[in-house]
Length: 172
Image 1 (tube, one colour):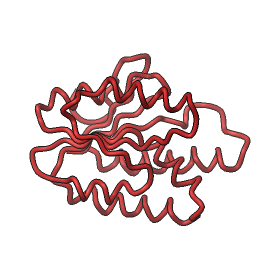
Image 2 (image 1 turned 30 degrees about the horizontal axis):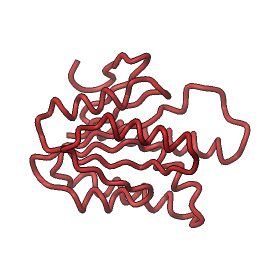
Image 3 (image 1 turned 180 degrees about the vertical axis):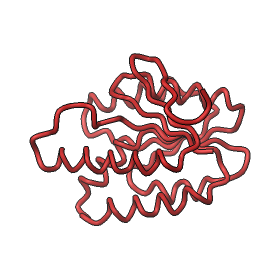
C-alpha cells in the first residue's frame, strides 16, 4: 500500500507519518532526503533523528530515491520517505538539469513493483501565493505535478493541518 501524507510546514505531517509507521508493527526503513546546507537545517535534521525510534533503519538519500527504494524493498516492511519536496528541491538545484525528470520517471516505474508498504511525506506547496522567481515557480509546479500523480496511485492520501489529519482518499 502507498500512502501520501501532505501538509504545510509544521503541519504535523511527519509526526503523523511516523506514528502510522509505528502502528504498522512492521520493520521500518526511513529514507531521509534532507541535506544540511546550513546550521538551521542541521538542527531540523537532528530533531527528526531524535524523534525516530532507534531500531528503525535510516538511509540518507537526497537524489536517487528510486534506487534506494529498490535496494531496501522487501516484504513485511514499511518504508517511510520524508520528504519529497526536499528531494524535489535537491533535484532541481542539481547541476544536471535533466536529473529531476529522470528521477521522477524512475520513481513512478519503481512504485508499482514494490513489496514494501510505503509512506511518502511531502509539503503541499500550492496553497500560497504564486512565487515571483522562476526557480520557485518551477519548484511549486513540479511538486504539484508530483503530488497529483502520486495521489492517483496512492491507496491513501492524508492532508495535515495544525496537527490534524484530514483523509482525502482511502479509509476514513
